[in-house]
Amino acid sequence: MIERLPSALAGSGEPGLPELRQTLDEALGGSFAASALLQEERLKSRVYRLTFAVPQGVLSVIVKRLSPAQAVRNELVATRWLPAVGLGGNGPGLLGIAGVRSGECVWHVYEDLGDTAIAARRADAGCAAVPAAARLIAQLHSRFASHPLLAECRQHAEHLDISCFASNVHDAIRSLQAMRPADRALSAEEEALRDRLVARLVPLRDDVPRRAHALAAWGGPETLLHGDLWTSNALAMPAADGYRVRLIDWDHAGVGPASYDLSTFLLRFPVAQRRRVLDLYAASIEGDGWRLPGRPELNLLFETAELARYANRAIWPALAITREGAAWGATELAEVDSWFEALEPVLPEEPASGVRAVARP
Image (cartoon, rainbow, N blue to C red; front, side, top):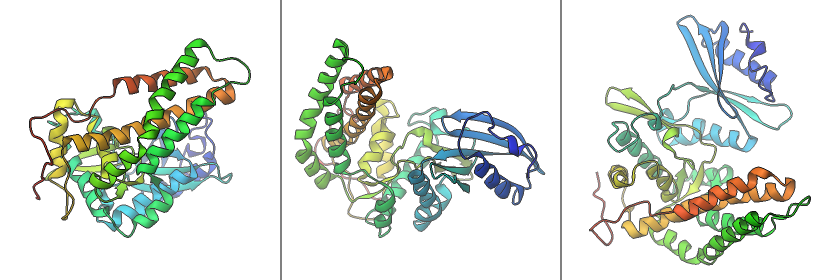
């Protein structure tokens, strides 16, 4: 076995380390001729960078602990779904899989692509990597639009269509209305916060039919979605023709309208620059019959996706307060409430009106 590998992540308290170490030894000790573990670094919860000695110098990999469902989803993205539409080289670079015997989790081993996230650069429309990222996102959405593989994607991925909005809103209302800890009474502040969030959510529940109609009319064909398209999950490496972008962290990949991904991506840019980023995306849409609607319609689609995420984030702290009396729950609910309060249209007002035709490339 690779030297020092038996002690990898020994102090982390992570489950499944024997299985992970065996997979690392098989994946790196053979193909990469790694001889010793040199360094380990915790990047965030459940994610680590491990550096090894190899004949060429050093090699680092990323190891990530996933739920079984997330692991299957990420594996299919890397090995089946993206390659099926010619985008296999734009995925996360999966090197190995370690299923934990208890079945509670799965470890994935990925190429370390370095600190190349667009979020770590000058994350605005002037960043030279942004056109390459917008082009890749448009290719992903275009090539999977009504693709036969969507049946398989739907089986393993999340449903990010109108059912995502409706179910999250319904579940958030129920969770908040049932928010009664067994060991204590809610404080006056917690009651006010609960009532305020329920008051925000009930009109959204009643608005499901209108939003469903808008998605059907303007959302375009359903497609494969990344599901968590922050600029931190879009990595850009210099290439001969500019930048090669790779999308990582497909834990929340799903099927639904492109507006779900676009709202997340556009919100990572300054308001005044979002139209330019959207134009870069629109110019790269492949095929015929898919045209982006005008600003008011797009803003409604984007708002629907964002509100679905807000509602989802209200469910879990409310349940934690009920089950455990969790003190942190009120803090998180207050943050969600602040998001509702600060919600504004993704795209700013512009002089033009009506449906905006997109020129085909």
